[in-house]
Length: 243
Image (tube, rainbow, N blue to C red; front, side, top):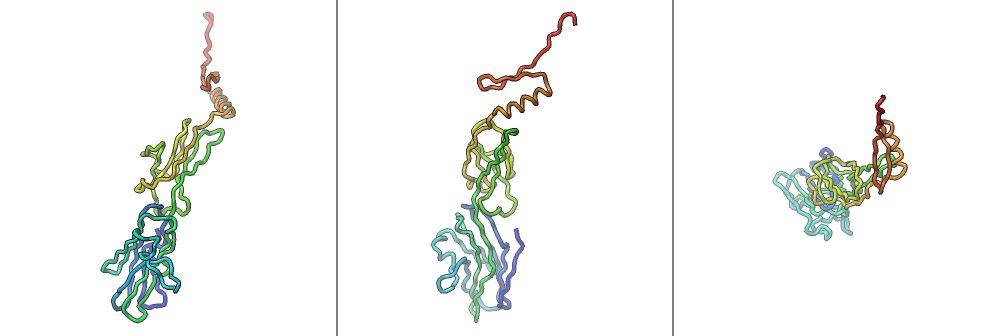
């Protein structure tokens, strides 16, 4: 996470400090943006956050925007701190958010530039197919746009059942079965990725030949296929009575 950024533009004694410059978080989750502000004198009468201006160039409070209706909460404390909380995040919420306050004095209007850049992303499972010589596959729980803020850990699901391990972003599977996979960030298990279905590996002729040859190098085995099953037979030498 980035360090605090204090920006003072043109008005001595006025500033807004944001606790972070950028955040990447999940679609459907909740985010809180925080700042603090200072001003030389007077009383602050109005505080709000915005992403755009109206036709006359005046910032529009998020609480007045239809797209944010019922999803935005402001909280102002006594120490000149201000929080913006947005619930049920949408990818369309990705924008730069700035804080604005108005005090009862001449030129008592100030917007804290550059603001906080919020990026909203979704999860997806990416599959790296196995090679002909290695019938396994690597699953990656990736985001569709930005990289998630912090160092999240993950929960993997096979056929709808969660796994206690692994908790990493990648998961290597080796399964002859057709199974479904999905993933989620720990703490946001209700926001898991869409399910992907992967068929089990296919024991093709090239791979079987490779496998059989390797087995023959280390043991006296013969191998055959019967009813699509792999059968191994150890060749035993029977000693004559005279040996």
